Amino acid sequence: MNPDELSRQFIRWQCRIRQYSVRKDQGRPSCGMRPRLVVNSQDVGDVTVVLSKSESADLTRQFKYIYQKTQDPADRYQQAIKLLSEYYYQVPEEFSGEMMAVYPAGSAFVERAARIGEGCLIFEQGNQRYAIDCRIRDIPEAEPKYQAAFWHNRLFNPNMGNTTKILGFAPDWKTSEFMELDLLHADDPA
Image (cartoon, rainbow, N blue to C red; front, side):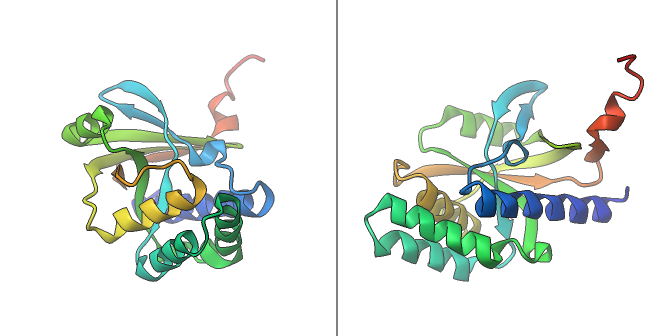
């Protein structure tokens, strides 16, 4: 599969599983939204990633408005679910390839991962498996992608602090791959 086709297929898949999550499962992250992160050949565990829209300023304002409009975390959560389930994931072409993950401000892991600068996110759900090689970076607070991920997560996590670190994962589609899980075990004598 060529890199452009892989990118389109992956983002469409992510939009589908995220849309299902907000419509049917109250936005709880499914396993396909929590890839395993491998850095320096070490599996460092699952990480919940947020997709980034190419143009996120308007949406970030909506997230921030919902957060500031009420002090009730349950109300914020329900309004976020409503917003995301209506149209957010309808047009996969609006998303950039970069994904983000939010960490506590003092996270030594963020500094180490950004310093190493590369890793692999392994997504699995149903019969789909993607191994996405990524460049890893610490996203600056002033960047629109940081603000989008911060306010998105703030709606779902009322205990999130005011200061966070956000890692960006920019896929290298040329070295990434897709496979169907049932094909992985075709040679197993089960």
